[in-house]
Length: 315
Length: 315
Image 1: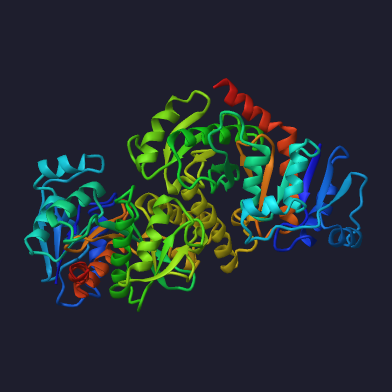
Image 2: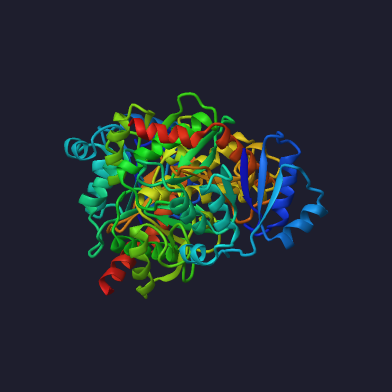
């Protein structure tokens, strides 16, 4: 398999990307090839300095970088030689099987939507987040940011995408899907949740367990939490801040609260597009890059995108 | 001042209400009269057993109770001799100046809306929640549940109500108001947030500091967090679950995480109605009842509802 990694994305790139890469290569199988996309003049010396060398490592020169504050569509069009533009080109042409970047999120999403395209039948792709469950298991919440306003049919599709992700990436058999809401009974909630409930209930592709509340997010009721991207994004960022609070309170060593730390899950996959695309956190560390590479490998190996495409073909 | 307390509301009533009352009376001024509304046969022996006696204590017999699962409007109409119905009757007729109950939330809201009525000019009252800020201060978030779907003008009113609450109850001078959103820049967010931003910016009654994100909820950026009741309710319940998680992780003694515990703030005031109404948590303990009584006293003393009414008259 071939994974493309944007070496220039993230506040601490390319150094942390190089260090994460080194971590990854020390455990990866010989079958995994990594395409490091970035400015050769910056990346090559760092690779040498950190003794990152492997016949499976391929440096792809990208002389341009898309900054955090650039307009996504405009930057992607004008900076064809940027690491993100080249990454999507390699992904679209099949040279790589997954693309990872901790760079400009907007540009990553535009690339995912227009270079890679949504899976046929998917109304809107979404971004998923990791949920550290109180019993030690891991759940998924989606959408966490791509679609601030949603329609019931979109939430229904997120439920399918999230179920497949939980099944094939998190290895949860028959994942329980919950609709994030303000009450347990059917009929509760805002107009969106009220309209979504009966559609999820009717959907035989998923194991819908009903509404769930804010207090159930980290609990064991569900493996897949479905919500609009506005609510999901706020929850995701609030959960991240809980990690910071726990740090402030000197809970550095707590195994559970540490699972709230972004670097321990690495990145957020875009679901519903034809190929694996992973968004990294702006402050991605070596650990985060390593974990994103691991996740990319899992997504390629499980052929999750094809499974998602088949599921939407069937329905 | 006269405070009405529903002795029958909450999973552990009337015992915890009696114990909370005892706590409160040990510190309250002689000017505060409490009207205990509940079943005499149950409450009187407990008051005696716990040696709760004061010339300022008045037992009001209410032979009926509205259960948690009863239909709010129907129950209020049919059970005129229930503690909640009697409480609102006393509040509406001026016999008491504030009413507290940890009973059926729906019935409390119906009572607040129809016995007490919204302040003139207020489109929709809301429920506010407490935000334990990382710097030790306390903020307020609203709405946390009454209005699952909101219009921009409602959020604008929540901003005014929350500012007055922060000023007069939390003693924050010139409270900073933030709009809960998924990005910092104007123009970000769902349709509601996008439409609300310019209205808040124009509102000279508040100190609007712009958008805030999920990660800023417990931070120092804002004193008043404005959001729709769907998002706010999920956040409130998620924050409560963080307390439970911290407990699970043996952080019982942590002063910060303990501030997430509902009993330390007691209850959630309904804002935008003509008189102070406080909703208690279903699992209210003695501490929670005591804190609700303290809050009711502050709301009466500061004459917050009149200040709110004046503010809406002026605008």
